[in-house]
Length: 387
Image 1 (tube, rainbow, N blue to C red):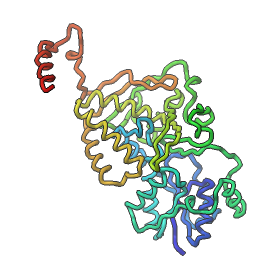
Image 2 (cartoon, helix red, strand yellow):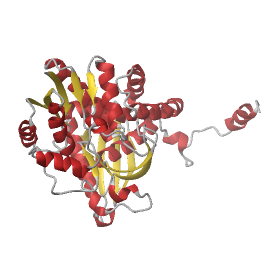
Image 3 (cartoon, rainbow, N blue to C red):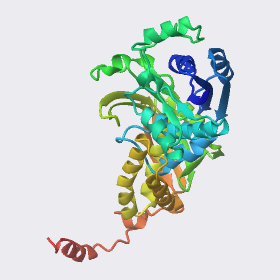
Image 4 (cartoon, one colour):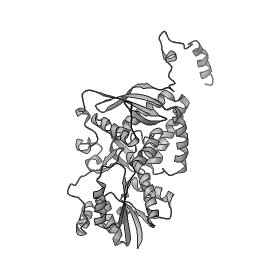
């Protein structure tokens, strides 16, 4: 019997997939990645065993996720289409990498996932696996099985006594990890409809946020956040703390029409309190310490970096090459940003760095001014001369 390692979430799709793959002649090994979903993984593991998995691997990947993926994207200022902070997209190559490692450990010949044929995640999983081990067979049950509707899946689960909770049926498709939350489907598929408050879990409504602003100081070292209000936090705790602070102030909601990799536009909603705070602060710190040419040159590369993440091309030469460049740009991205969080808004209201390129004596119009304005005439003549 051939072995397959299934990326297992415990939901209806992947639970049905265990039984379905068994019926196709596979021994199914479930792989559960803890990227901060907040699940009780002992229960999810038990569910996989009851459904028919021969083994279950549960790996805590939160530290690796933040340090090697989230912070790499932050340093690169990677935001897809200027709005999506890539929380879900960043987790996929990490999960796929460890899925391949589990397959090698178990001497499995195949891997499988629970993605649909319309989304981006199928591309991210399968491209990463293909790069890391092109010999592995890849199976996407939802693209090929006989079930056409969720109701048919439920009937299948009941028939085979698969232990899934389908009583709390939600019209939304939701993905959550430590860094953020994505919500789609249901009435959100109509781009004219305002997102209902019920879709949000990480953030309070800005209208119900505190009437008094919250101020925080965020300290970076070489592009990586290290302290909140002078207190050192390790990576995972820092994200969790910023999610808490931002969420209470209604910070981090995104509603966008997004260009999916498969060629369709989709309406996506995101909650990303920590990411919103971090990117806002990081961009302002770069504005303070980077020279003009570096800052301007990095901007289109940030867009490309975001596309590589979104397109499932994390494990490619270009992404590694861009990391080398990005890390060079971050050598002096050290300093403290003071942010004001108020009813959904997040703005930097104070900034300082020992590498600051801002010189008050050059910028001021007051008595401290040392800028020689007489030089401007010659500069302008030379600047305009080619035209």
